[in-house]
Length: 111
Length: 112
Image (cartoon, rainbow over all chains, first blue to last red; front, top):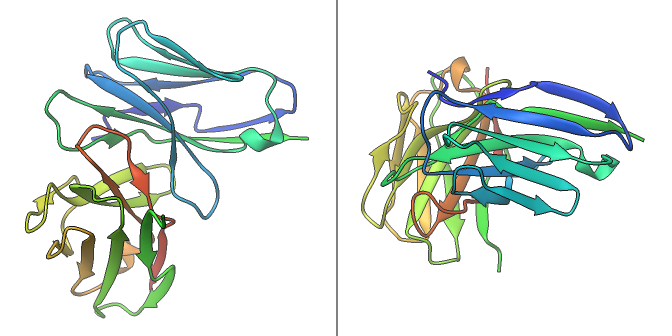
């Protein structure tokens, strides 16, 4: 059973366009993390959100945690080729010893 | 700092062969994890450890064994490899379970 569903699974856009990817679950999470993974490398943490409704910005990336802490979104403004990669969300419950990862969104930004 | 180091980076096995993947971290992390990554499936947890001498099962533990004899090392073993175990394997570590994970660069395993 996949606890975290991400959409879309694949996304190909032109440089300069905006995009949003989604991470949804039927479970309530105590915190949620977003990672980016480049080919041949392990995922690298972008951000952690812990409060329902929280919004965090990282340059052109905006992350939001849903009010009910069951979903999250990642919005990229004016995408650049360097944003290309696999974006993974990961959630945890209070007291959990591990994170559960989403299915991933593979983003390609075409110059 | 090297961070999290996995060896080997690539391996090809025949069905039924055994092998061990080694993960080493130099950040004094208590928790260590083994994940597998398959297309469209994200990362799935195989086994994890909350400290030296401890191990626990994750989501997909069948066919794998692990050991954490030293705090800095976490070994993943396949006793009798099957084609379904063809995947990319990632080791990760952190101070506590729900905190930032530090990943190695992965091992591409093919079982023929």
